Length: 247
Image (tube, rainbow, N blue to C red; front, side, top):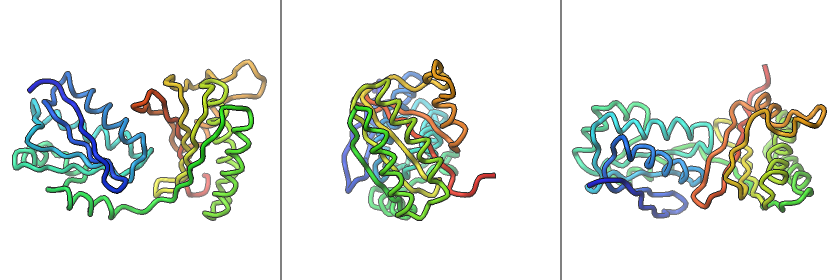
């Protein structure tokens, strides 16, 4: 068995991903990036089934799942549950120590129950045009959300962040975009999906305009921010604002 692929299925908003093939040094980044792209769609949960068609070159290779969980912990912060369907996989996961940091379950039903134990999120999703009107529309949506979710202390920072993220989508991607505003245990997340695969670069946003620091503002305001590619060639740029007061 050489190479690796990932079969997917939807289960009430949860993505069930089934790796097929051999996990080794060559296929490690393939599986890692494939799972991250699935997580970038912000499903209710990401359930990874390890069955008879999945094998590893060694227990150390299973660290790919720790890497995926670490990368999605800030955003999209969706539950990730490993389903060890064979005794061999359960043994390897225990031996590797992965079970100390990644949720595991013996079957799909148990995995769904485990994922549902995670705190619920609030979500607002909005399609935006690829025009100069987009930032204004996005700001109005953020105002409504902060009022509805009782987050007045985050309003000004959220307005700055959403203006920059949506503005970058208009100026650089030049495509329509989708804004996701989510309230999770990790904070208030603002995420913008646009049609360009090019990731944002800190310090490269409109440096020619006096007083415009672009992503430096996002970097300074946010608890964490970054970007992730999607399967369709688009990307998501996200930022997380801490729920507590500023220090």
